[in-house]
Each structure stands twice: as structure tokens, then as C-alpha cells.
Amino acid sequence: MESLSFPSLKTKRLIFKQITPTDIQNIYKGLSNPKVIKYYGVSFDSLEATKEQMIWYRNLEQNETGIWWTISSLDNNIFYGAGGFNNLNKEHKKSEIGFWLLSEFWGQGFMQEAFPLICDYGFNKLDLNRIEGFVDSGNINCKKALEKMNFKLEGTMRECEIKNGEYLNVDIYSKLKND
Image 1 (cartoon, rainbow, N blue to C red):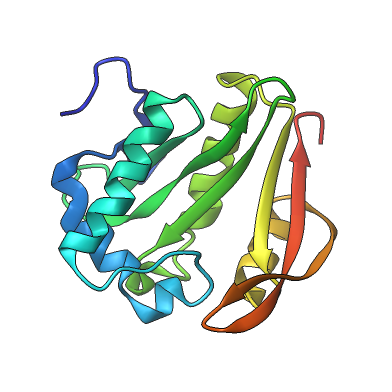
Image 2: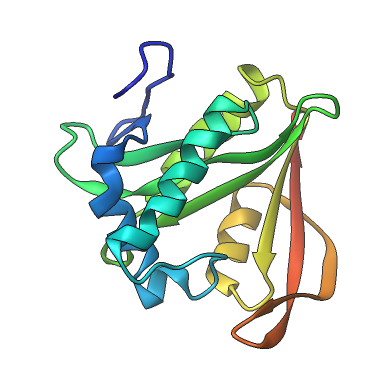
């Protein structure tokens, strides 16, 4: 059930709403798609397994450690993806931004439209000073998009994660409130 206090956001083409249990089919569609999860930290092979992600979204809200939205068309008929913040650290006024889109909507400017709104929410409503983006070093498109939105590359954590039995490097990007 959508919470009355949960913030809904809008852009010219998009509406951002609370993720609810009824979104499980759309979340599964995205997080089981090999193109979407190629550089993503999780993947699911069934609706049952996707419940784990739904619990994660709910726990972010309940524990006040983040906030994620569904991203849909203004009429709420087309689901595009999801985005938001996790690892929210109120003491240090920072959080990690995350975002994914269904692959059929790539290259249509949705990320450039959604990211500024999400960042604005973080800086102005969550009182963040710093927004961090952790990107698989091989994810060239995401890195270009972050740079286009004035995120600064801070460095690379070498072989810091293992995915499918392989070590991978992660690039750290950040944007400060005053950037």
C-alpha cells in the first residue's frame, strides 16, 4: 500500500512513486533481464526470488537508510525502471544513488531527466551534501551519463567485488551539493 507521507515526484514525462508489492512483476522484469543486470549487483530468476528485493526496498524506508521510487509514464501506465538512494548516512550527509531502466527505454533521455530530480530531492529534502555513485568500471554508458550530469570521478577501487567468479573494478563518482 502506498504511504501518504511517501513523496511522489514528477518531471515533464515521468512520475516517481513508492515501490509497493504490486510492482513485483515490473521489478522482476528488470532485474531478471541480462541486459539490465549486466553491471548491476543483483539478479533474480523468479518472482519468488524477487520478493527479496521487495523486502530490501521496504527495509530502506522503514530503517530510514534510503528511498527508492518506481519510474513510470505520467499516466502510470508504462513502467520504465526504478531509482533512488541507499546507504543513507545522516551523520555524514551522504548517500549512494542507484538507477536502472528496462532496456527498451535506454537512449531516450530518461536517465538525464530523472537523475537531476533524484539528486535535487537528496540535496534539498534529505539534506545531503554528497551523493555517491559506484559503477562497474566496464559500464561505459553509465559512466558517461554520470559525467554528463556533473558527477566527478574520484578513483577506482581495484578488484573490490566478485561477480560470476570474476574480480571487478568499481569506479567512484560523486556530486556535492555545491557542485
